[in-house]
Amino acid sequence: MTAAESAGAGLRYDEGVSGLRILLLFVDGLGLGADDPAVNPVVRASTPVLRGLAGGPLAGPAPRQTPVASLVPLDACLGVPGLPQSATGQTALLTGRNAPAHIGRHLTAYPTPSLAALLASDGLLGALRRRGVPVALANAYTPAYFEAVAARRLRHGAITLHALQAGVRLRTVDDLAAGRAVYQDLTNARAREMGAEVPVIGPDDAGANLAGIARAHAFTIFEFFLTDFAGHGRIDDAVEIIERLDRFLGGVLASLDLTTTLVILTSDHGNVEDGRTRAHTTNPVPALLIGAARDVIRDRLRAITDVAPACLALLAGGAAGAPAGAPAADPAVAP
Ligand SMILES: [Zn+2]
Image (cartoon, rainbow, N blue to C red; front, side, top):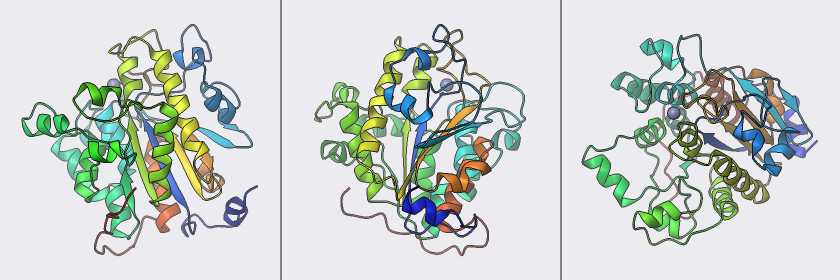
């Protein structure tokens, strides 16, 4: 047991954990599917890091404990009929509110005004910043992205939208070139195709860069969505995407002090774990908890709506009653 864990053993859930940092690794469209390589690319992929953490393939509906991690299956359906989707699932993850119940259905892609309002009022990033907790969104955004949004060819997803609502800085290709941001493909290759002058790096290097950001903020979130693209068949090689993610996670963990940092890998809905369909699935999604304080929240996690309240409790001592003060300044210095 680490020092942070032994210190956390007697903690009440509403007290917060002093000095803790959280890295929320959001992986779109990653469910806990069948432990069958014929069906599940996650099982077929070579994932030494994930297997080491979970004590086997990241699959199956059962909770698991290993000496280094806890795997908790989370319900993503939230009692609403139909297949879970990204706009409602991500809003639920970020707010702790049952977003699909709120609007009466699972909604794909981009938040509606109603979901945007929920993110603005109840979103985790805003709640943390009002309590003075330093927050980062580690993704890098290219000029082409901002141009597409300005031209209304693209809309912000829930995480980007909520970061803007909360006054969290969107990182740029300059940050990416300096290793102070991570591109969505984990290698920068796609950013170069879009005209950004950035080096192509290994996923493990991108992981080290993410760890650098996480070391400088109490709460860091990074969004990876190529898993969902692969699940929809928009990328052919789902196994390669999973293996890329595994190398990335290895780079992250190698560069973090896990006695003071909690890494939470989670998702909004299943997709890539079932190669028999290009649609989302109703499978539970993982909350893979690695590092400090995982035992404090492990038993509190049942559904994707439990993630944001847990993060808020760990970092700010509970969701209720905290004063709404001025947002904490995003550190102007690197990373
Ligand atoms: Zn999808």
